[in-house]
Length: 328
Image (cartoon, rainbow, N blue to C red; front, side):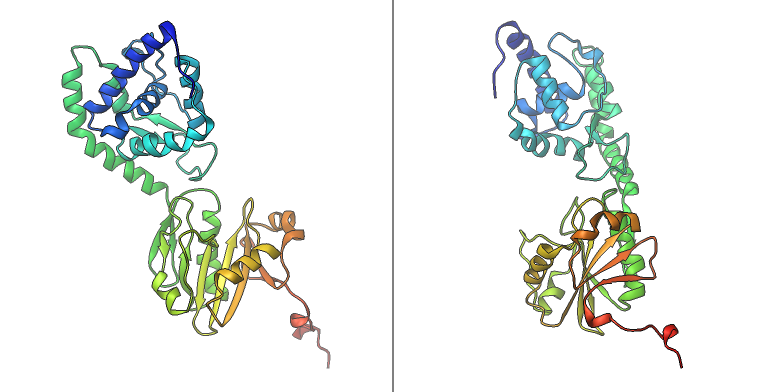
């Protein structure tokens, strides 16, 4: 991390201290009132060293643009590997506490999208605009008194954006928006009733919370132990009647069950001594076509737009005439 110098350093240090003072006044602890946090606040208010607080604005910024802003305005250059520190030690907490809003321009943006942006919450913006004025104390008092209500409303909005998924048992879970999660929903709600009747969903992956729906005890009873570092598939379903584990990968941009992935999944579920069924799910036939050459033999493909059929990537096992072609 390179340091600023001269007048920029003096003016920037003063503005940084003021930003940190605002964070302390709004109740954040030591980790969220340090220099990194202060610069994050300044970036998301679009305030340089010479800008007055009443000029604060609310730009939409991702982590890299925040780093770029600090470098441009404060001559302080963070190394690229500090992205995670900025996100995990400042931005994440600011979102949880209602100071920032994540993806207000598109609440359904995938959790791990490279287009993720953050914006100062409107009430927090108005508070910051009163700093160093005679309105600060009364505005701060009002802000603190309504903060829990603001957090509840933001949490409610985030929940509304989540994808509801009804399991075969009738229980409902939710997945974060975007990415392959709509396809995971289709796999559970459309594929399972057709091809794994009576199935029990033991795992449903979510980029936001990898182990949100994960029945560890049930898998353990089947002889399967999964470590926290395991590269899980998107869906795991137990078929008690046929004693199968159906392992699904929902593919929108990557993750097809190719030969390498099939071997990985066999090793991951090696403790289960009955049948393993590997299924790659696509939204459309066109999507499948892009990955056709990669799909492993001895696996299945399911296409959400044509949900009543499964494509067998197999050898001789399924070779033979269909009833409507048998004559006599």
